[in-house]
Image 1 (cartoon, rainbow, N blue to C red):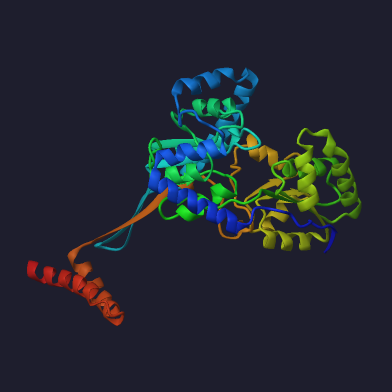
Image 2 (spheres, rainbow, N blue to C red):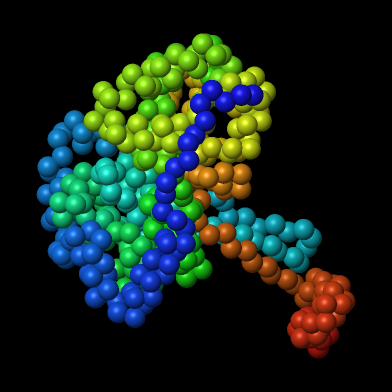
Length: 422
């Protein structure tokens, strides 16, 4: 395995600065409530309007969306809903009886209130609204509230608001950054206290989720977006170049990686990337991202698989003659895209899979956002008298061995209860 292009050192916010700034924001909101929320919105988003977005504004935003775009949003919702509804079918309450008189059960319930964060920043992201709201709805969450930051122009983008209207969301706030996460975690008027918060965001949003985890559930701690493309000589160099460009335009910190078995393909892809960057309105971001974080590796398919399982990419794209064979050997990735006619943007928008995925190697131990993110697994036990006594006899020995005599006493009393009842 050799590098034909290595990533360069990139500049980013230092974690210490982000951590300290977020801690200060959370503490001030704890002390001052909604006054602090409004202050931070003025400071960070240059927004002085009401935090609550009225239903009439959502409807007006919906009406402003061109019909063709509206139909595409509806198609995206339908596909995402179909896939995530199927996920809900994986959860079945059950009762197991290992023997007569012992019942062990499991129940699956959705959280009661979910807070959804839809990023703003460089681009309006109605797709993120779809990807986060639909799984919560399909899980059966009874109340969903959404926070989204105002744009530099001083309003939440109509595409986002209109999409939320289509989704039937009525509780929406013009609120961004760490202050939005804090408001949803703690319940700061007018934002209700949520049981879980889901949705991607910048370093400050991610750090707020990290600091507030435990006060509230979170979906994941997301970092810069990334793609790893595995390609052999059968791949189309122009298609691969465009897919690397698509990833690079997310953010200057995005990571676009190509691992190929063919040096000619690698050189052609690199040439195509360099020649096409200036054609895109987002060329400045693409150029910076590709320069700092773009990577091209040359090696065998076995080496590509080994690299994949260590790198654990957010997005894995396989452009080889037998992509399913390669996929079967890869065990750590957020979402995979197979074959010459499928690329990451299909998953970002329209295919039906979710685009909120684990980054920074966290696919080694976590999954992307799905219906199960919003579902709790709860267990219960019921014992008849005879079986209670039988289990107690063994359980008492274990409790006493651990020095927990109150535990032993609790179980011993059930034995006494049974004897007294006879």
